[in-house]
Length: 356
Picture 1 (cartoon, rainbow, N blue to C red):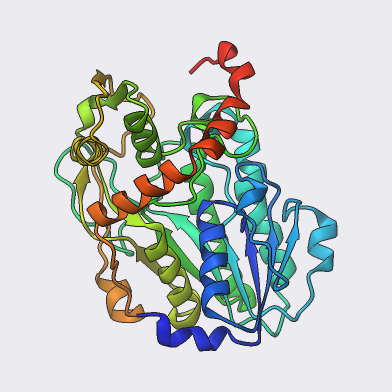
Picture 2 (picture 1 turned 90 degrees about the vertical axis):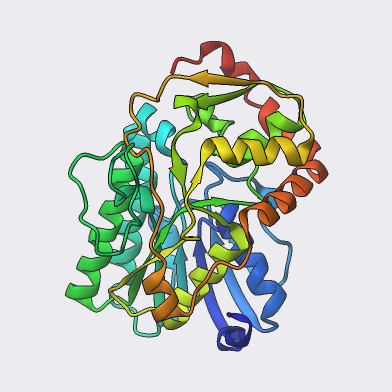
C-alpha cells in the first residue's frame, strides 16, 4: 500500500519529466490528490502529449520544452527532492520510422538530465522509467516470467527498446560514478484512463494515432470498426493499470534502493486474443476481427514480468484486475470521445502519405 507513504512527499519539490504524458499526468494527479503541500514541476515538449493533461493547480509549474534544452537544464536548482523521468519517444513503430528522433527524445533526455543532476546534493531519488520489452526474452514459445536479473539480449526490436536499455546503462553508470540516486522501474504494458489516441504531433506512422493495443481496441470496438489482430493475437503481455504503475513509481522513489531495478507489472500473462474478447464483450461491440501477419520487426512475442522482487523489496502488488481496469478505461473513453476524436482528426492530412 502507498496511502500511508504519501506524507513523505509533504513539503517536497518533485520534477516530472514527461509529466503531460499518459503515465506522467496520472502520476501528477495522484500526488495532487493525496499530498496537500507539494510543489510539482512538469517539463514536457508535448511531442506525444496534450496540454489538457496538465492539471491546473497553483502547486504545478508547467514548462513546455524538452528536458534537453540547455536553458531548462540551467534553471534546475538543487532544491528538488524527487525526479520522475518519464519522457519518451512513443513508441516502437515511431522509433523505427525515425531513429534519430527517438535518440533525441529518449537517449539524450536521459544523458543530459543525469549530467545536470549528478552534483545535486538535495536529491533523495530519481526514478527512471525503463521498458520490460528491452529485457524480455524474444520468443513466441512458452514465456517464462522475466526477472530483474534476466540477461539483456544484443538484438533488440526497435530503437525505442534500445534507447530504454541505454537509459538503464546510464542509470547504472551515473549511480556508480557519481552516486546519483537512480532507481530503474521496468514498465510492463500500461493501460488506463488518460491515454489519448493521436496525442501530440504527427510522428510519421499510424502509430501516432493507434498508440497501444488497449486504447486502440477499445476505441475501435466502441465505434464498431474492424480490429486487426497481428499474428492472430497469439502474443502475450503483462497488462498493468495506470494507477497501479503510478503507485509503483512512488514506491520506487520511497523504498527503492539507489542503483537497483524493479519490475512494475501485474505478473499476469494475457494473450492479445483474450484481451480483444474481453473488450468486445464489455462494449457489446459489432466489430469484426481481421487476422494479420506477424509484424516483421516484433520478435518479442510472449512475455510477462516476475513481480517477486518488487513485492518483497517495495511492498508493491498490482491491485486492479485487467477486467476492472478495462471497465474503467472504457468508461473514460466514452466520456472523452470528443477529445479523442479531435486528436485523431488533426492527423487526417497525413494519412494519405502513410507508408508502413
